[in-house]
Length: 270
Image (cartoon, rainbow, N blue to C red; front, top):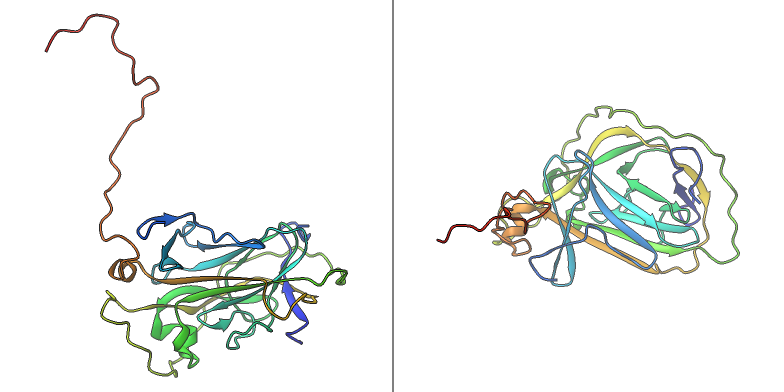
């Protein structure tokens, strides 16, 4: 497969390509001009909120939790999204660069990038884990652990890719996979502000996630939009001052339909 020309696209469930403040949580979506990106906790369906700190977006992960990077094409043309996790291309496993393979989304299409692509039929699930157990560290590349990136490319005007055959793509329960021994370099220190080990993204259980191949000719060799999201554990984000150390718990409140209504008689004086 030529990564410069051949990219991956996923069909929808029916078989057709669907044509602040420092301490304040932001809407759980990175809004771009071309594509929107959300991070989904796959174990409970929660959309993880963003926290803005020194110009960067952060999310709080939880060790052992599976997650997905949800992509949404806001435009009226196909887009190519080259996705990296911890500095590694999620399709090829190469150290991430702009000219590599990515996912092609049709106008208005959503797709959950849920793991490391193992074949056209399988992925290894993304899951938050200790830095030393991350896929990047285990393959000798620990320096960029803790960041998710999406580089978005427009298609060259006038280019018409061949239509792939429509298929119904399903998903089954995860298939257990044995773990490999850690052969990577010693990782960097978490620093004095960290409350615990830094998080990375592990090479989780195998899951079925079928894709097809299509051709895509980029309008430019440089991405027209880049979304960058950093992550760590909640405890570390609190220690770093990104999330407030204390948040007042919501008080119990039973709303009343007519809060101003009183008995229709004169009350006794106090």
